[in-house]
Length: 162
Image (cartoon, rainbow, N blue to C red; front, side, top):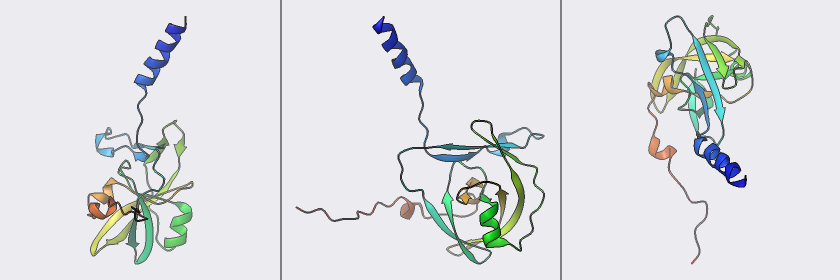
């Protein structure tokens, strides 16, 4: 009887897949033309600090969390009103959904000026209800080149003593 129980646990563990931390918006390019629902997923790993990218948005410094799992760049309503009160939002038909199927309200979309180390682009930004940091998704990564060596550079905080 114990052998069968252990086999079930081993099978369960073997079928478990761990994914890295991600706020994921499904790529709309793979969606059907008439469907505009996007998934927003949060899964956690042991990484303690998210990767931050400091950008100039409409000439204001804003720190975005880098999220290669997100198809689109998003910002909460609170942050949007803090930084860009005067920027009008356009109607947006995209619908976001969490991994568990919970709806995530999209308030609108705007096009903003993004500057990173001299690279200037006019890029779309989704504004959503809820809490969380601004996310820099893949749609911006296609237009803004990051210095990946500095992002993944490991700097020891202390020198080792011999």
